[in-house]
Image (tube, rainbow, N blue to C red):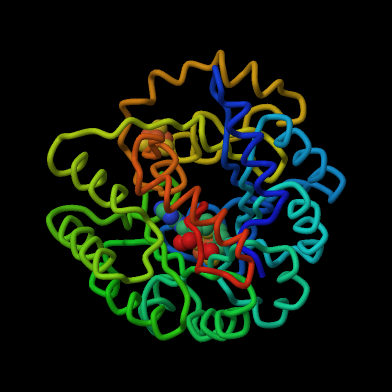
Length: 345
Ligand SMILES: C[S@@+](CC[C@H](N)C(=O)[O-])C[C@H]1O[C@@H](n2cnc3c(N)ncnc32)[C@H](O)[C@@H]1O
Ligand code: SF4
Ligand code: SF4
């Protein structure tokens, strides 16, 4: 179970090569569908109707255009991606081209572990609190129990990280979830909920959020398995509480909707409204003619899939070590995994 496969090293080279002298996407997130079996208050997606979903052939067409664009990391989500019966076929195609991850609510995970594991580099399972709090935020009883069952079934077979969305009501459970993931032997990733216009306004704010982020940073510095970088937490606190902005580079993260359409400049500002199909676009040309400048000063969201790549610096030795050298060394050693790596949520 090597964390970094040759295909990933090749795609990483593709990203670096495509990015030289211009802008290119490194990470792509793709919603396979909007339908979901849960009803989370903060989430706008389960409330939408799905149009015709892409066939496996169209998914491959999409992936081939991402390869041409320079993408290295492809993350599948939704809606609930495990509701698609053809998910293993889609993941197999992705695994041949990209570092491949999935974000799931975990309800269907236990029964699908064997068919998914061969094609995953990283799996995120969402948990927004312990027990009843998670069930309440997710809108359906027993969703906590099912997610935990799924994590127990899959841990040790692929790198797993819990995905925790910080909301007004669950700020105080964040440390309990860090403790839980330690016991489960998996990682955890945090993002701050964003108030989408068609979801319940559950984004946290004020001094309590600042204290939560600072406590999480302290836990990380003491060795908790929190995947976000130190800079993630300091940048959010600096921009939202101290007036020191970070520079957003939304071109590093591409998003593709369930019909294969590009979502630009980022999925938060566009609320996942797609433009043209990605296979009809010359990505290199579009990426280098689009007016990204207007968004560099935007610090509106704190989604790790945008913030982490934006914060990456070739001049920061810790980032080079954690994100480039350690995964390569772990592949060359290849006796086993060194723990999950931060890719996308
Ligand atoms: C939209 S879900 C899709 C995958 C799957 N259904 C799940 O819940 O993991 C992907 C991630 O987005 C998070 N999310 C949902 N609503 C959000 C919001 N308003 N702001 C930030 N993250 C959100 C979820 O908690 C989940 O970790
Ligand atoms: S966050 Fe995930 S589980 Fe919750 S409603 Fe949205 S898509 Fe479904
Ligand atoms: S900070 Fe603004 S431009 Fe950047 S990803 Fe978030 S919403 Fe989009």
